[in-house]
Image (tube, rainbow, N blue to C red; front, top):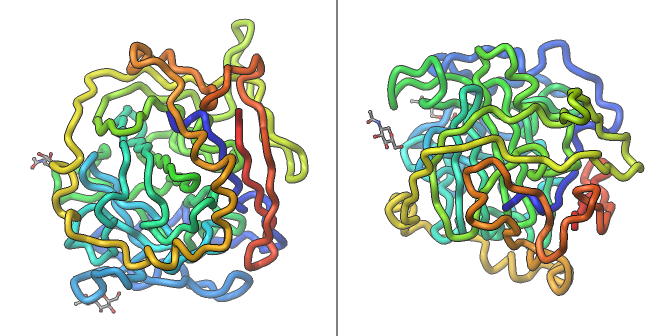
Length: 367
Ligand SMILES: *[C@@H]1O[C@H](CO)[C@@H](O)[C@H](O)[C@H]1NC(C)=O
Ligand SMILES: *[C@@H]1O[C@H](CO)[C@@H](O)[C@H](O)[C@H]1NC(C)=O
């Protein structure tokens, strides 16, 4: 399960002194029929929005800078990833949409990117978790990535001005009817991703799509039963908001410590109960991108950080939950290849790198 692993960082909560805007992205109600060219009009601090939100046939293709994404169904969703080969940390503000379906003015996700994807639709959100070859999405090999979300260190979102819509959340009246999700989180890196788009009309949306736990990765932010080489769509219950857990009959809340202090959550995350999982062949799901090739494969192999590959990197991605636990909500979050530690998770390595703007980023590997 993607849980076991690592991650993350993301600069969201501790980037330097960028002032918080008075009109945060999370508050911008933008009907699908009234999307502006750029939803973010700020220019200070992190600069202007890198791409645009009006996306159409003239913007479609592998150089698109479309920053409007969709999360609809197992065969129909987008990820945010770098416009050019990079790390997520270095480009969190300028990521662009890569989608499984043409026709929306975005880049397309290249064939062979997905190695297993699980969608869970709950009352409050759609969650999609998967294994990927991230080099096909312009993410450097070995980058453990981080969190992109509709919050961000200054309220402008990561990417700045990123909008997300769905035709599969309450309020939609069919596949041609898109509702905005104003609360969403996307973790990507370490050859995995997990995303959650919450129903903004749900009073609990802010908690179900909490975005302040950026250093504890998919295991905690999107507890799941995703498996390598399995493509399935499930129904499920809402997760307990990240950071909350039950101990001794009481619901407690753990908060991620400040940068510099290793985040060690005092609980083991458990996927919410899921049911009615239906499996598919990836070829049938992603036929629309069968001929899309990664334009950056050559640069990916030229990366100077491939040495991280030789020991710790995604070789640790193995599923540790037995198949009988799938869908039962009984999965655990041990990391791959290692026995569960009694505290659920342990940070095995922390690397600190400097982002373009001097933002400190840390990547964690849990074992
Ligand atoms: C297509 O999208 C581009 C980029 O956002 C925009 O400049 C252009 O006006 C759009 N065209 C139409 C017909 O909407
Ligand atoms: C909506 O799209 C999904 C695939 O993305 C498809 O499975 C479903 O049948 C569509 N619904 C309708 C009513 O066409």
